[in-house]
Amino acid sequence: MLPTDLPFHGAGEVRPDFPDVVSMFDYAVANAADAPALTHLGRTITYGEEALAAAGLAQRLANIGAGKGIEGRTVALLLPNSIEYHVAYFATLMARGVPTLLNPLYPPTQLEPLLRDSEPRVLICEPSQRSTLIELTVRMGKPDILDLGDSGAIDVHALIKEGTAGRPNLDVSPDLPAALLYTGGTTGIPKGVEHSHAAIMAAVRCMEWGWPTRAREEVWLPITPMFHIYGLLMGVLNPVYGCGHVVVPERFSPEIIVKALADHRITIFGGGPPSIYAAVLSASNLASADLSALRVCPAGAAPLPVELIERWHRATGLHIYEGLGMTEMSPIAVNTETYGRKAGSVGKPVPCNTVQIVDLENGTQVLPTGVPGEIRVTGPQAMKGYRGRAAKAGEGLRNGFIYTGDIGYLDEDGFLVISDRKKNVILVKGFNVFPREVEEVLNTHPGVVAAGVIGIADDRDGERILAFVTPQNDTSVSEPELRALCAKLLVPYKHPREYRFITELPLTAAKKLDRIRLREMSEHAMRGASRS
Image (tube, rainbow, N blue to C red):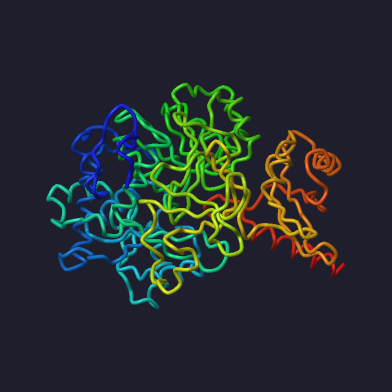
């Protein structure tokens, strides 16, 4: 349960405790029907127009289900961040379907296993994807395909007209699934994570506790893909919770983002992983941009280097407030203006959560303050479970807790500090080395944009540390300089044995550092060296 003595409702207005996502959307429409809801590619629609479009699409979905709605069947959303994404998401809920949030850029080989797992009754996609999806779905029971867009079979303006006839009269209850998302999949096959309406609404309110917003006053610029849990919250759900205006950038380019921040008087920058903030800091128009309206800069999805936080503050005068979340449960902890922030931490646990640090061997012994171990969590915004994997729930669910796979500790002030991912720990001469600690040191060099560290097999030491470094375009950085920096700030066994300078670090679809790809690059280089 959420505590009753803390402001989980945003700032300036006590908002209702909505039982489900559709009720939240209906409240926004009733109270801000003529206010702008979404802007994208030069188009703006109001909350009233969005409601009509969602109603029109919901009726189409209900007709596919013989007028009874989708009745718990999944609807795969294969759309980029857009007005259409919002409409499709809320329409699916109105038709009692389960929005299944998939990366529209996945090639068929990556998409097919996820479609087989989720078994969608309907696929909603861009017109350009239709032919590819038809070929793919022939092997999968031929679900209906709806292409949604200005050049497709269905466009938002047509749906607005259809929506005047009303939407399906279908009840939505708090225990129904409100989202099916898939884990990042950097190791093994992605798992389907189911969230109920009640859990999603708890997540929305927990985000508001960390980064409170003003009702009817905020203009949001989301960056992270909406198929990601952070992107779903920051780009779809939390803006609606406060009747806010979402401005979707046409694409990600540092100069385009900075221009949008200034032109639209953005107040909440969706931000996300450190790669986003680092890119925006490189924009040629940042120094001259008027960002005086901007007030909230959240971060999540990947660890944020302290140096990057400082650079952002020097450039904008604003603090980045980092938090921790995962597909299975978000948010877990947040740096906040009200309850404190500490650079290098992911903030304090949200008050309704239980966060414990347990031993790495068995995961059962709760460790004292300041001692690192695996982080396990539970709270009202936790997932219902992994789709179709009840027998394997022990992979991430044990004793009522979600085991995050993150290694960290709670400090004496109650802030949660992440050392690294459990699977990323490098074992050098019998000592544990957390890549993030080494990366933080490398990132302090003014000539370094970003650094990624992995361990590779070593006959003598067990593993040795390999650092990939992306240098600044206008600043030189050499290996001897980096070796001298590490010698000054790290014990010897934590020093990288090798350095490789690359144009940019590989990222996953969620914009996290792709260590799997770094290992592949390392292995490829070693094979090339052995042949020569």
